[in-house]
Length: 207
Image (tube, rainbow, N blue to C red; front, side, top):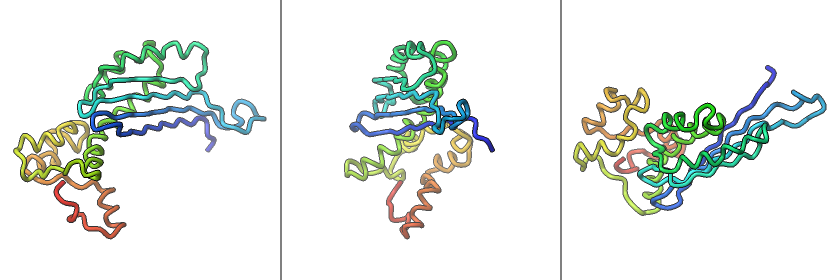
């Protein structure tokens, strides 16, 4: 098949401290070599936008935002960059997508930057689990044992995932097991990695 367009998203999250995350994202659109100029043997980048968000943890509130237009098709494109300062103060958790569309959708923003923000939000949410794992690995804390927690505290461990997809639907089998006191299911890729390394998931301690 003839390649007509290539869009790539890249999002990476960093731990700045126990109270702050840094989320960096980029979106890049390229046309394949020779599409516009037969003599051109290099991909042609049309859009390359970068976003850097500083996010308070565990509140997931944006405390800093910076947008950079590395490559853009029109000289006037960067005029909208400062408008994205309006991200500061927003929660990057539930409701973020709706708020971003409201503030930056259509003529109120850059469609590519706004699409990138949509891709960045789930990464910040995923960091809740990663921060816990990082703290445990560094000896800063131990994972809580759900068996010793009250039902309310146990649900607080995973409440941010509730109704984010069909697996985590309020009435799903998965959630019912957790509410009944069952242990969180070990994600399949992690279970596979245990197998690959010849390790026993049962030795990992309480989840």
